[in-house]
Image (cartoon, rainbow, N blue to C red; front, side, top):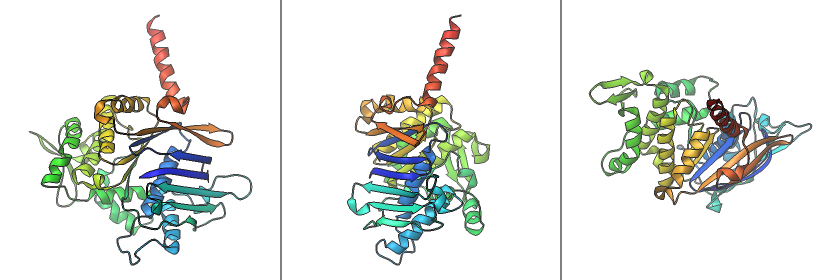
Length: 350
């Protein structure tokens, strides 16, 4: 479990100290306040700290992680060079990223400067590989990119975030059978009801939605919001998502109507209830309220939650945090939604 992240001079952040819940962590803010930057940086550091498949070393080393962290940060965040991740100020600045976990052997800290082109400095070296790897879901669905995207990404210089390649590789896992299949059936039920069918894959790795009484429908012909549900359903049905330790999801509500957002909120809480530490970036008041409503029910009484409000100031982005929405102050993106409701109600009286 990730317990805390401290950052200094990272992109739009001057300094921040974020303490996370074991269950759901929701980052809220206007566009440009660094929500995606924050999630991607944490994902990149955790992913780079996982044991490589072709490992010839038994534990992390300074030389290996220096390159691994640098490569992953650049491939995930896509700056022109590593030093561009350091906050822009007059003169040279050092960017610091420090991750603290439930197991202190996993703790890691790194730094880089505006002058850094391709190297990071390891301030704290983890003593073991990350035993739980992360999943990053972007705002776009990726099922229609499988399976061809991986080969294209690996063989050509493409300006796509590596999170897309990482997730596409996870989507290629086979579906579960037997006892484990029954274990995930309850989690899949609301997703399959919303989609009106089950996700299936042919021998070539192409995805379809199997609709009862209608046969299979090519995934590109399925509405984009439902394709996002299909992506999530497949990661659950293969057991892949439940085997990971962390889920990072950037604006999951994109392309979803309120009815589907309600289903989404329930699935997010169910994942947290099954031991996944969830990180969500959003500015959807509807999703936030639904998460709070469901989290207050007895089914999810044991799911810890934290909210993080990102506020733009003259000296970079400031982070407020707490266990409720009220703890994070006024977020303009949320206030606009509330004010629109007030304006509409006032209009209806005239």
